[in-house]
Length: 335
View 1 (tube, helix red, strand yellow):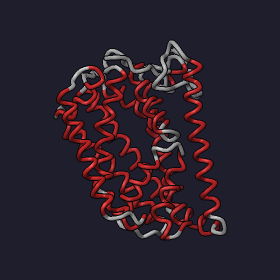
View 2: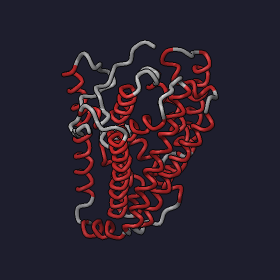
View 3: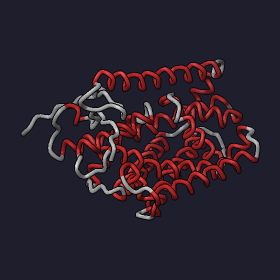
View 4: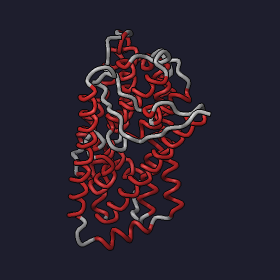
């Protein structure tokens, strides 16, 4: 029986690096992104600490209000959302010409989404690099895999634009801003459709799903992922006594999605909750945000744990880099 060597040591990772050159640059890029996320998280948490000054008892009481059973349900909803988004990614990869097995793709996604807790761009790089390493001949090249993310992100942005009216009340956004957002996203979708029809080779292979090859299924799975996240938000808010509508839960998800583009790591949940729902009580909103961050991380850990265990069961782990399914990423090359 082969020995199993498992390590959680971070692997140099950056989409713009190659495995052969720039190891120091890759390592620096990876550490820089993680460092920025850690710094951003500390800044946000420091700001929340100032805001919560004098409200410590309320904050702690709100944290203890949520039943353990509901926390488990929230973590399960996070797993459901990640699985649904992974299946959407699988559809996009297959439409782009990939023939990799679903099991291998889900493994790569599992560890990638765990890395997304620290930084979204690092998580995407982990997923793509992992998939290319385990199935280089059954997957499109890196540029096409990067492009395959675009349809999924476009659907998420379109949903955010459609429901951006939920931000009018909590943030005081003018009523016409959501209308402009919908028109702008509609234009972007039209441009994406036109581009996918006119360009079909190289990196543009990643947009093949837009031309109708599984487009409806991809959208359905993205919708399922978004709905699971909205329900998770609603449950956590009600669990600590913040009585909000489903539209407030949507507004919170939009804020989390937007703030997720910033390098602030796992502090996204508390920051978004205070921003959107602080009017209902800063302590309660911050507590809800913390519980969202905890259950979200727990769900990601469960998914990543399955990926590692499944890899071990399937035949043992080889090099340490395979143990975390996070090899040094390769740079996009002309397809």
